[in-house]
Length: 125
Image 1 (tube, one colour):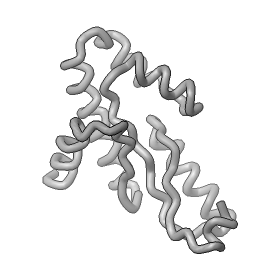
Image 2 (cartoon, helix red, strand yellow; image 1 turned 90 degrees about the horizontal axis):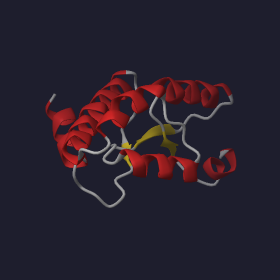
Image 3 (cartoon, rainbow, N blue to C red; image 1 turned 180 degrees about the vertical axis):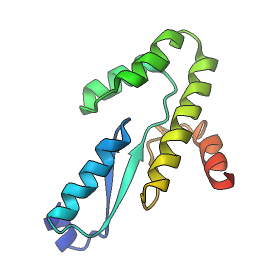
Image 4 (cartoon, rainbow, N blue to C red; image 1 turned 60 degrees about the horizontal axis):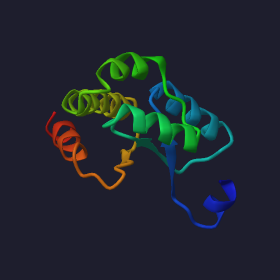
């Protein structure tokens, strides 16, 4: 990463995560090795629990126990899944921004909804 920054990269986008502590720990570790560029957190709004499990298995992202507790019981109800995913992402994004994140990168997987709702809520408070 330092080589990419040396070559001109002026920001970093993280892999998706569900525990904001992981992001803030990562930022502290990068700052400790003198990485000064913006570190933008990558957020995946949850729309489908089973797809989330498959996707995170492929990319190596950790799914927190909280995510399992919230989404596993409603995994057969698409409307509840999207609503809970929006709520979870809004809470996650607001916490990241309040903690000093320079912005949010959404992994949309080519779906504008629910990101449209999340953005509107975060922007309007």
